[in-house]
Length: 48
Image (tube, rainbow, N blue to C red):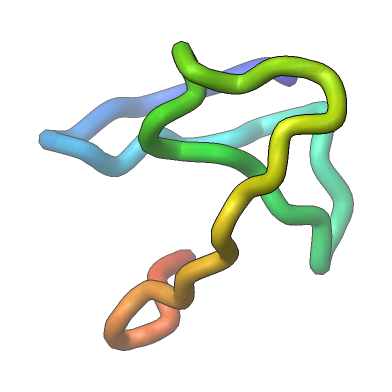
C-alpha cells in the first residue's frame, strides 16, 4: 500500500487497495492468523 497525505486520523491511500476492500485501522497490534475480528462501520461512510 502506498499512502499519501495525513490529516489527524485520516490517511490517503494512493495505491494497493481496490474499491470494497476492508482494512484494519484500530487494534491491529493484537492481530494474529485465525483471530476473529469485529467489523464496524464509520459514521458518515468515511472516504472521499
